[in-house]
Image (tube, rainbow, N blue to C red; front, side, top):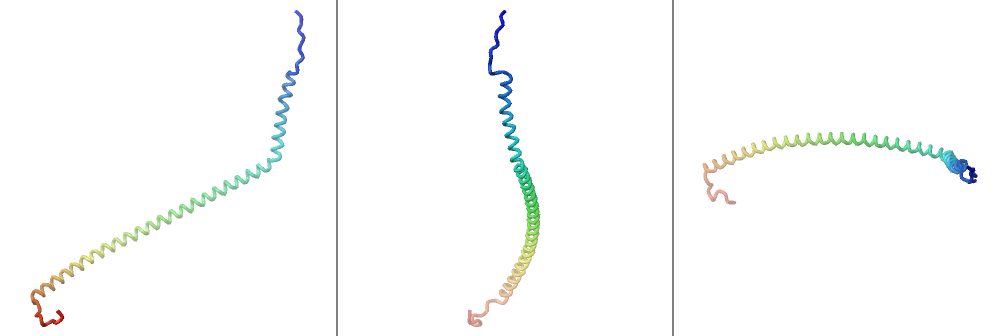
Length: 131
């Protein structure tokens, strides 16, 4: 059996390794250079973000404390208002009883005066010229 002659081709394992190695090395060098060039900026941005997050947390905490204080003051004002309303209601009830007593007394006085008027009779016409 005759031997076949190997054909010379450009594509072999070495060429494949070179073709794949060049882009990988180029990308690695690019990212390494970018990291060295921008790494300090990224760290600074990380610190700024952390400071901003902490400031927002503190502001949120202060706001919740202020809300809690406001809520407590509103509840105390509502309680004082309710106490004032109940006091006014009690005074109104007392005044209502006093008005009933005064009305009863005045009715008694009117009925007494009407009884006196009936007992005395109508005055003579000439006695009071204005009437």
